[in-house]
Image (cartoon, rainbow, N blue to C red):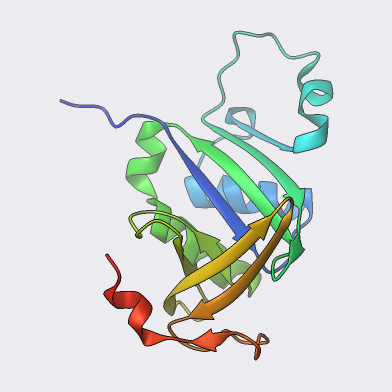
Length: 161
């Protein structure tokens, strides 16, 4: 039997979620034990891991940060293979968007320069985005993004390969 390799789920969220909310969501989403989960701000990871033995392996290792532009936070979650089998990248983004009433950007198999956004209602859009430093601004989407009326709607983004 082939084991799925560990992977990373890198996302941007329109809603800033507290660390405790993020922790509770991840525990529920991946049905994992508290001791198998690490959640910490990316600027404080070394400090938070200081007293943890170096050989400890977490099933889910998530760091987060505040960002600017059309998103409020970014987060990167390293996911053990068996958990990635249980909850795939798209399903994870859908669950997060619905749970936190947010829109969530993630990347999977889109052409270079394009991304997928999941709305809180589960609708999936393809988007184009400018990113510089810690600022992420959408400039085109295949359908309107709630609360962002300045984004050009371009259904042709689905045709790009």
